[in-house]
Length: 119
Image 1 (cartoon, one colour):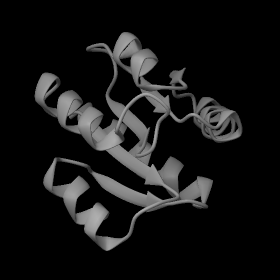
Image 2: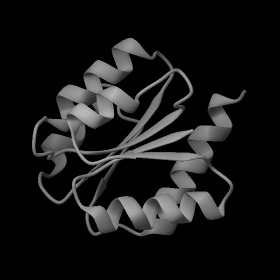
Image 3: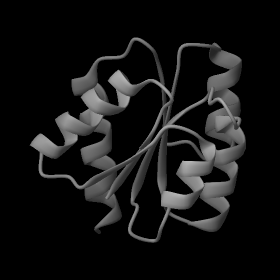
């Protein structure tokens, strides 16, 4: 299962729809509180925005990686550069994509992470 966390509805919808087309179960969250509530042991991959209305995505990244070892977290953001990407990877992010991103590239990263989680 993939958890898609972004406060922008169109991003959640487009990523979620593409993943569902690939047969991947998706749960969505629009903020940090929903992300924490919807996180479970069934989640293998998180697509996580850095800027959320009620949380810092980097804090959520660290929290999710600590609580769920082996989970893949793919960070997405319209803000921040190489420094933020390095910080995210240091906290355990599997990948870091800047918005606007290629949805097919993101889906490829998610499918690869799901495949790795099953082995």
